[in-house]
Image (tube, rainbow, N blue to C red; front, side):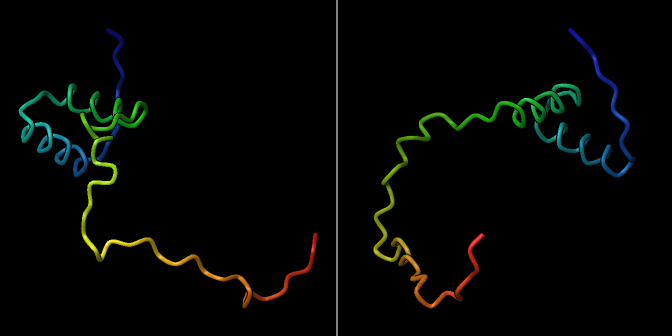
Length: 76
């Protein structure tokens, strides 16, 4: 498996170490997962079934603004 080297400051390294420790994985695995998530974003399992699942009456689509009062612009 290919390897990479990272140069980071001590403060960031401590944060990475703590995050890996919280997830009980190695630093290498934690960093690889973070990179993978950035280059290949994936939605959680069953994410699509959430569509339309909000039944709160206060959750409404905002009104489309009128552009009639917008200032006049010069054409290009």
